[in-house]
Amino acid sequence: VRSGTIAKHDYGSASTNNQMYGQSTPPVYDLSSVPVDVPLFISRGEADSLTDVQDFNSLVSSLGNHQQSKLTVHSIPEYAHADFVMGSNAGQLLHPPLIAFLSNSTN
Image (cartoon, rainbow, N blue to C red; front, side, top):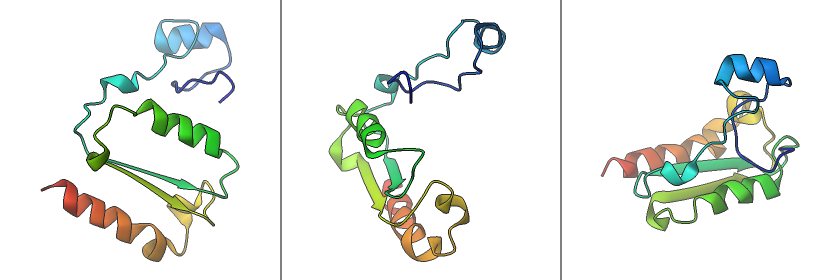
């Protein structure tokens, strides 16, 4: 978030990062290595204070070469970060589009 990159967890100290990753900073994820034809479902909660719209858009933009027919971007206006795991209405708001995506991605 602070560095403007999508990277593994930063342990907060160069020595711990070195222990965990063999380098002083967390490795950046190379999203260009994601095959452009693999089906992807990316969802966000618009009420999520941990992941703002700029971060989300940055993630989606980093997948710019991805086949658009294989990329599903889903947004739930009233969802916050933990609602994807603990939301009592996930069966109505999250599961149907996710199941539809999974059903279609096997074809």
